[in-house]
Image (cartoon, rainbow, N blue to C red):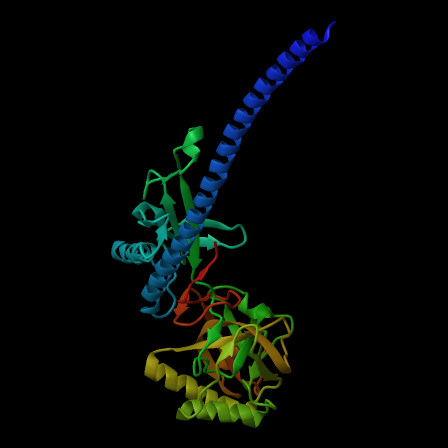
Length: 369
């Protein structure tokens, strides 16, 4: 084969290869452009989704706060209470207004009424159940799709056939168990053990006397932040409550510890009876906020960590020697005073949340989803 023929064959081969490379480069550029477009548009959609999440969070919190305001205007146990249509509408309105304070991909977020629900949040299963019977949570879904606000138009992905993308975000806010007590909220020198407070709604708790082995009597005397928690200190607290000169301190679940002490405190009972009778005469009942201490020690002594708060209706107080004590309390004797109360559930206080669940809720919500 002479040199001329060889050069011709090599030239043809190179031209074929150049043509193939050109095709491959063209295909690669198309794919690269499509991937770049997809990445850019996905990033745009993710930003929009984060903006929608902010809108959902704000709307759910606003709706739950409106729910808290409704409950905060009521007193006592609300067991079985059903929201009216007007109350549901006010919750929905507040959620809608909060959602509209946000934008997603340049569009003001409008929340569909059908995407706002009141209900109950189960923290153990992380599920939301819609109901208007004593709901404690509000769930809101915000959208950029065909149902609300329109889908997000793509910038470059239309090159590969995707002209728009739909995005949604969900948030749930809940009225949680109360976690703080303001000064003056707790007006009884007793505390409940976690064991007693967990006996459930309506349980009759015997503050005194303690009966070994009976969880319904697992409680103790406490002098709040006074140390040492002596009989004289407790007597002074009760006398101050009667005179209106003693203000119990504030408390925060998981942070505050109160000082507890054992004993029957015989010198305190007459004043406790007076305080009970005074409250019943003034208010029709003596409803108290009781600190709940950690654990199941039924004869607590010393500083005890407070993990939550329970609402109690004091149903009976008797000084030592009262013949009615034997009827109202178990384990009494002639020298024993007696005090009982029932646990009230579904009570809502205008306080912060974050405590252990003992039936009393704060009206300031927190996000749970």
